Every structure is written in structure tokens, then in C-alpha cells.
Amino acid sequence: MQNVLVSGASVAGLTLAYWLRRNGFAATVVERAPAVRPGGQAIDVRGVALDVLDRTGILDEARDVRTRMRGMAMLDGQGEELWRSTEMTYSSGRLESADIELLREDLAMLLYRQARDAGVEFLFDDSLTTLDEGPDGVRAGFERGRDRTFDLVLGADGLHSKVRRLAFGPEERFIRHLGAYVTVFSTRNFLELDNWQLWLNDDSATYCLYPVRDNSELRATLGFRSEPIAYDHRDTEQQKALMTAGLAHMGWETPRLLDAMRQAPDFYFDSMAQIHMDRWSTGRVALAGDAGYCASPLSGQGTSLALVGAYVLAAELGRADGDHTAAFGRYEARMRPFVDLNQALATANQGGMPSDEALEEAKNGIALDAPVD
View 1 (cartoon, helix red, strand yellow):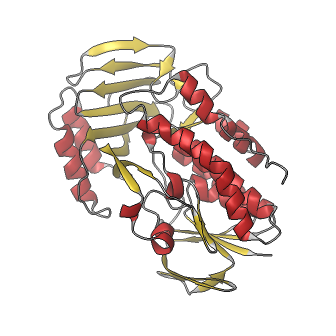
View 2 (cartoon, helix red, strand yellow):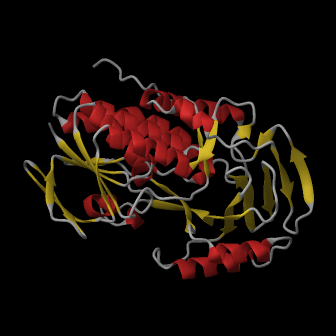
View 3 (spheres, rainbow, N blue to C red):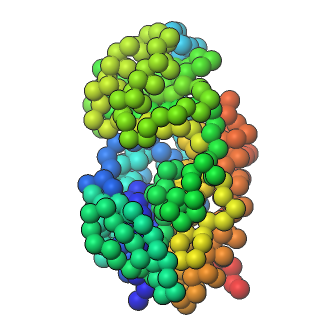
């Protein structure tokens, strides 16, 4: 049985580890955080990615914990209502859609439970420091644990992937900035929203607010437009200062919201960006999800890409009879057109939502079952 190390315990990494086990591999997941990360925005699972949830055995549970928005209102930068709709939400589109919107942390916990029960080993509170490939495996160095050798190493560790940096080179070679920065955090529902989403927008900044957990909690996604900014990815106080400056001109409840942001225990900040690479594998190392082909939240398809990419990679490894080079090649051949369609949703539609036609083509742009060689 081949031993595979997966870096990252979010949607892509957890899905990958579960399906590696299902396909006959020993899987170990290393995650910098002390547990599956809480917080995060509401995310969408669409099209063929719903089939991945079904095959993973969690589709019904994902539907049970989906968000229950009744609609949304769009406000200008000073809080004046421009329009409202009881037929759609901004993030997930039409309310009657078969697609699922749920909290990222809820999906991650469902996937974690499946992976844990399937026998996946988890190394929390640790991170990779080195990767040294030899003829028979990859020796992985860890910040806390002892070095170990694995047959394969798979990076599912996000936009700022450590595996990608160690195996492929500096992030600057692959990242494409999309002209904005975003933060996500939770706070109490001080607006007393009742399953209702608010979207506030002006020419330079925007934010979205919606209640969760039976309307007891508010999730906030804030963003401002900007050229690339040099900042420390580990310095949350600097990031909060950047977001404060980016939204300081906006009216309505913005000062109160920024104060809540500064107190939030689950603050997240990053650029709107994509990852573009000529290849997603080198030797015994490969990438999945945002690490290899981040489409950015602007696409609305990041979670679906992570689910499908992880499933396809594990499936190709499972049918390769130990030939990882062939598996990685088939994985890329199958996924590349799907990735291109979904990344285009963001780059072609930075001013608004993609067309229904473009989204339908993108979300169903791959078959889960591998073609016969």
C-alpha cells in the first residue's frame, strides 16, 4: 500500500484524503492549524461537484445544513437601498436552484468526519518545511514532527501553498492579482437580520452581510479594490489596518462593522487572485484545489473545483496501478478544460455575476467517471 502525504485540511485536502483511502492508499494529512479551521464564508457547491458530495456520502447532510436566505437587498455606499429581491441571493443565485450554499466550516467538518472514519491519519498543528525527492519516495521535513518518507506528496494547501513553493518555486511565478482584497469574519447579529442578505457597494469597496446559526451570528465579507499591496501574510493587525483604510469612506454601519472585525476571533484576509501553472505535478508531487488552480471567490466555483479536482486526482491514482506519472498526466488532461472554464468566470466577470449560460457550462464541464484508455 502506497503512503501519501496530503498538505492541507480544508475542502480539497479532506476530499483527497478520503478518496485516497477509498482507492487503496494510506493517507496522512498535515495541517498547520490545531484542528479543522472554523469560520469562513458561505460557499457554493454546484453541478458535478454535487455528485462528488453524493459519492462521498454527505450530500443529504450538506443539504440539511445549507443556508436559508429568503432574499437580499443591494445598498449603495451610504446604506441607501437600491433594490431587493426575494428570488435570489447574490452569492448563490436563484433560490430555487439545485445548487447548495453552506458554510465552509460545515462542509469541512462533514468531510473531516468521513476522512477520519475512513482511517486517514491527521497531523494537526504542524507544517512542512522541506521536500527531498529520491528514487523511491519523498522525504518530508516537518516543523514539529520527525521527518518521514512518503511515496507521494499532494499539495492541497491553498492559495499560498507551501508544497507549491517547495516543489515548483516562488509564488510570484504563478499568482495573478485580480485587483481587490477581501476579509471574512463572524460577529453577533447586531443588525437583527432574519435570513436576509445585505450587499453594500460603491466604486472602490463592497461588503456582504448575512445571518447564520439560526440568525444568532453574522458573517461578513468585506472587500476593497486595489493594486497589489506588499503585506505580511501572518500579521493580522496589519491586515485589519489595510481593510479599515479601504472601507473608511463608506457610511451606514461601516464603523460598527469595522470595530467588530477588529474583535473577531476568526479573521481572514487575502487578495483576490488566481493561480496559473503550466503543470500541476513534478516528480512525485502534485497539486489540487487552490494550490494548483485557484479561481478566486469572484468565480463562485472555488469549492466545486476543489471537490472535483481532489476526486479526479484520487481516482486517477487509484486506477494507475502504481504509475503516478501516468495518473498525474491523466488528472491534468481531464481537469485542465474544467479549470479554464471556471477561472474564466472570474476574469471575464469582475464587474458582476457571470451569465447563467457561462455558469451552467462551467459547473458541469467535466465527467467524474474516467474515460476508458
